[in-house]
Amino acid sequence: MRVKCVICDKIENIKDDSYLAKRLRNRPIHTYMCQPCSDRITARTQERVETGNFHLYRSKQQKDDWE
Image (cartoon, rainbow, N blue to C red; front, side):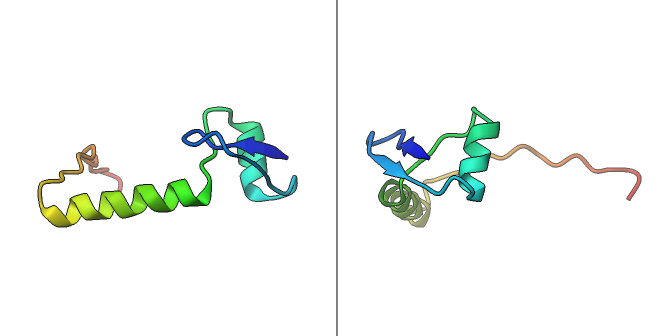
């Protein structure tokens, strides 16, 4: 399966029977990002976290009464 990175537009081939290929075929909302772009984003995010000025806003978990 041929896939295209959403950031750098690099075209790569992945195995048709891999989990990633199945996810991309069945759920069009998922996008492919090549490994160098993914590593670069991870490194830059980690640098911002280490400065102390980075806040990750997550939705609050609702407490379930049944537990």
